[in-house]
Every structure is written in C-alpha cells, then in structure tokens.
Length: 444
Ligand SMILES: NC(=O)C1=CN([C@@H]2O[C@H](COP(=O)(O)OP(=O)(O)OC[C@H]3O[C@@H](n4cnc5c(N)ncnc54)[C@H](OP(=O)(O)O)[C@@H]3O)[C@@H](O)[C@H]2O)C=CC1
Ligand SMILES: O=C(O)CCC(=O)C(=O)O
Image (cartoon, rainbow, N blue to C red; front, side):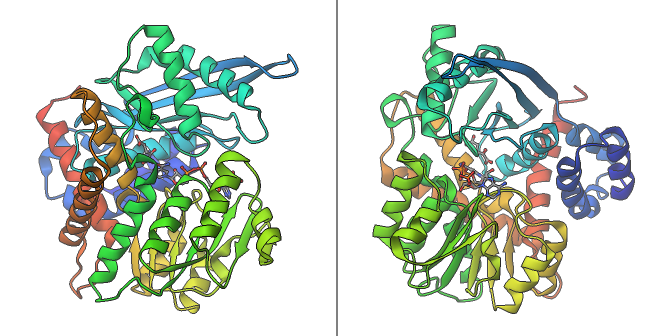
C-alpha cells in the first residue's frame, strides 16, 4: 500500500469531504509501514475496504416547530465497520453536520472502539438540526421524527447509537422513548440513557474522566504530577464539564472554558462551586458562557479560542480543528507540556506536527477520549445481563481500559529515541485488531 496513492484515490472519489480525507490521511500515514509487513492485507485490498464505510444512510426529517411551521432537516447514520462488534458511535446534532464530518467521525470511531478492547464496531450519525434556541418540545418532536427512520437500522446486536455534540441525556431519553413506541421493545439500543431506564453509572462522566486518566498516564511517563498544574479547557458541554470535575478533584486548576461564541479566562481557577454554576448554566438554563464572566468578573473573549493563554496543559474538548498551527505554536511558546484530546480530531495536521516536533506529550482523541464509548460498551453489557453495576465498579473498569489503551500506544508508538508517538501507537494498535478480524471474515 502506498498511503499517498490511496488518499489521492479517495480524494478523487469523495472530492467534497475534507474532514473525512483529513482523518483517513492521519491514519494511513502512520499505519503504512505496519500494513506493508502483511502482503496478505494488500492482496485482500483491505485498506480500501477499511476506509470506505460499509453503509451510508441518509434521510429527510420533517417536524413541526412551536409556531406550527414545518421544518426539514437531514438525518444520517454512517455504519462504518462491524467486524469486531455491532456498529457503535454517537449522534451529533449541530448546524455544521454533513457527510464529510460524520464519515470522519465514523472512521475514527472504528479505531477508537477497537482500542477500548470491547466488542464494538464503528459508526456515527446525526443531523444538521441545532438544539440551540429550541424549546424542549421542539427538541422532543425533532428526536421523535428522527427516530421514525433511524429505528429500522438499529438493534442491540446491529447498531447502538449514543450522544455527541448537541445530543445529551435529554435527547437520548426522547430517542429511546420513540424507539420503544415504534418497536414495542425495551432493549439496550442506545447508550447514555437515564439512570432510571438502563443507563450506566459514570457514562456522563466517562469521556472527561477518561481523558484525565489518560493524561495522568502520559504525565507519569515523565514523573510529573497533575496536582497544581494549570489547564486550558475548551468547550463547556459534557466532555469539558467532567474533564474539569476530575481536574479539580485531582488538584489541578482549569482556567478556561468556552462555547461557540467565545471563551472565559479565570486566573483563580474554576473551582467546584464555579463548575456547579457552569453545569446549571449549560445543562439546565442552556445559557452562554459569557454569563460566567459577568457573574465572576473575569475576562471573556468573544469569537476566540483559549489557546493563547498561559498554562501547563491543554485539553481541547469542543470540536474538530479547533487548534491550528498558530495556536499550537502559541501553546508551545507558553510552555505547555501536554495536550490530550477530549474532542475528536481537534488539532489540525499542522498543529500535530508542531506538538510532535516539540516532543511534548500529545494524545489523539481516538485514544484519549475513548473512555466515553468504553463505558457505553459497559452499559451494553449491563443491559444484556439486566444488571446495574456500582459507580466504583464502572470507574475501576474505565481506569483499567484507559491504562490498557495507554500501554498499547506506548507499545506501538515508541520511537528509536524513546519519544512516544501516541498517534502512531493508537492507529497501529487500533488498526491491527480490525485488520485481523477482517481477514478472518473474508471478502464481505
Ligand atoms: N459526549 C461524549 O461522550 C464524547 C464526545 N466526544 C467529542 O467531544 C467533543 C465535545 O462533545 P460534547 O461535550 O459531548 O458535546 P456538547 O454538545 O455537550 O458540548 C460541545 C461544546 O463544544 C462547543 N462547540 C461545539 N461546536 C463548536 C464549534 N464549531 N466551535 C466552537 N465551539 C463549539 C459547544 O458550544 P455551543 O454550546 O455554543 O455549541 C459546547 O460548549 C466533540 O468533539 C465530540 O465529538 C468524544 C468522545 C465521546
Ligand atoms: O458512546 C458512544 O457510543 C459514542 C461516543 C462517541 O460518539 C465518541 O466516542 O466519539
């Protein structure tokens, strides 16, 4: 396999899908050497079958808003690969959603889910519907309309969606209610469900907690303690909130968080009380992060990202391509020692190069944020055995999984000079398991 040829070919076939091509390029560039050690992969044209999704489902979603107007959005589900388990991955509701973004996310999910050690294939879906500014009833009607098509493609052994940007506990609840109404089945077909109806303990916390556990593993390789470190966090949604919660618990100091309008900088640190305020503001009142700056009298920067502030660590937890080359250079110039990605693909290829050239600790999302889907996998297990595990039990398993992922990254990513290339480690480890399963299952 020549990575550049495969990428050029995909670019020709899918010319309007830059994020998908970006994600594929990142992976192929790092697995090429390992792939070429296996001539049987090439003979089976494994790479093309791995890059192109098994199935792309696209549909119209029509719903009625509070004024009685009929609205139309697009709905999608990308079932990327199910060789190691049922399709699994979140749903994103955001105005920017398109095929390219969902295809990149589904591709990444396949490798991420492989890394978790659990039996889950990769998928992603969503809609260009934006919950922002919508009433609860509008969100409910949209979720119900979305499910009237999606339910045909789901099942506990077929495809198990969950949340992502714009889809949290509220949306998963409405989606689950409609699935049950349509099928008459109470099944573990969605994860991130409410605690009262099959949700796993720690699932809401898992992505943020898991990222901090992964970060601690990286810091431990350099004998660095997280306690007392200042941290730049972006986003203020699910991942950012529980990232900050774990940072505070471990004695670190988050000093920023953001939303799509701007960021706040609190030099005293976001403490437990202030985080409770953010959770109420974002999860209940659905307000803007600017209100934090007004309440606590700190700096708010409109239309900007937090990467130019000084800190020890950066945990991007909002969206793709939120750290570009210029921001990465600023982070390095300001002395950042570690970047661990809570979001999916938040760093551009140029930014990643800056981090790796500077030899800082840098973890890609597919390794660092895998805790969320890992606990989703544990939710599936609990649903299958009709049991509910304790908080301590789930957290211990999450810890073990993040340790395993870290160990695999070190195993496959350590370079001759001892630097751990976590991108290569994650990609090779994730790839090998999927590739072996594909080979065993024949050309299908
Ligand atoms: N939820 C999970 O379990 C997992 C999530 N992830 C990834 O983590 C990231 C955050 O997801 P999650 O916290 O669940 O989502 P939420 O919807 O809960 O929060 C997203 C946050 O990011 C901000 N944001 C979204 N889009 C943009 C944008 N284009 N520019 C700037 N800010 C933006 C939002 O601001 P605003 O409110 O203004 O839109 C919000 O603060 C995503 O990349 C997601 O794919 C990865 C693994 C698992
Ligand atoms: O929990 C899940 O199934 C999906 C989580 C997710 O979307 C992700 O890991 O990006």
